[in-house]
Length: 379
Image (tube, rainbow, N blue to C red; front, side, top):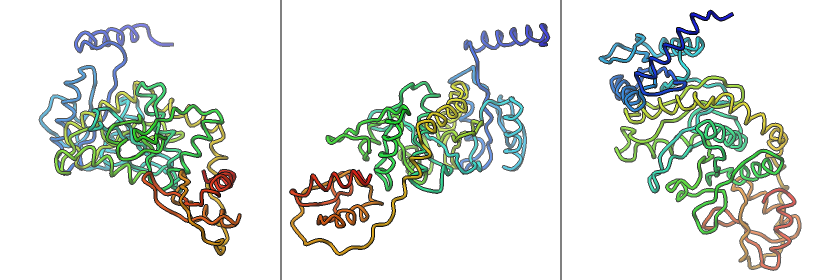
């Protein structure tokens, strides 16, 4: 049974903190490791001080070398010790979340970054930016979509708009996600700002923030984070955004946000606040619920259908003028899709339209070709 005197003491302590900071309600404690930055530990400490100044109710515990600051410091001299201390604080509940430069997330967990878009000044999530969700590119991007939705919801966006960046595998990912939505998993798809619309996004969409969550492979996401965060400084100092984000995956129960060796104080401050917000929004619980909902909608079965058998090499049918474009086919499946049409005695060629790869057929064959491609799950 809880001691009433202890409970009363905790209540009065919280009231004292609230009166001192002007902030009522649950507040987060974030651990920050300060070793490993190319800018020195002082830069990270300055970011922590900025975060606390902007949110007086926020608590930050520094882990690293002694520095001049009023924030609490747990001293250590190497990154291994810093991570050990960080893990101990999280396990003991003395920190609700952590921000660090490096972390070996297990396979299945990757980070969801957050940037500010230059054209509209709008926050946007990039799913994902570090880590590895799966070894297969398409499977990883589908899981990244679920992770991105979970983070956005934990940050207070109840129906985040999701788009898929136009990279290799995008059309397959879009198709799986739309089937998943049709089978009961709630996804709000964004629309490109380009005149042809659609949920497959181009560079214009990255600049304007037409989606709340942009799905891509991790390497592309990492590159985008660096471009968005450091383009004003020439690349050596990240000035904008909230960092590379929290690691998210089915069953991962910690909130550990990543920054880079070039993250400047403004990004460090943003990363601390991002981690605190994810804690307040109970990200691990939200993520678990999202992955379970996706599984109930048939995610595993849809992912097993991503691999199509190779189409046997065939001689093409008699050549004819091809002027009709069929879009929406992933570049990784383009040759197989053409082979599937050849097998049905429809002459087709590959091409590249303004929005990505296309298949070219004669106008008279277009309707039948689309039906064949749809039947074989290419479009």
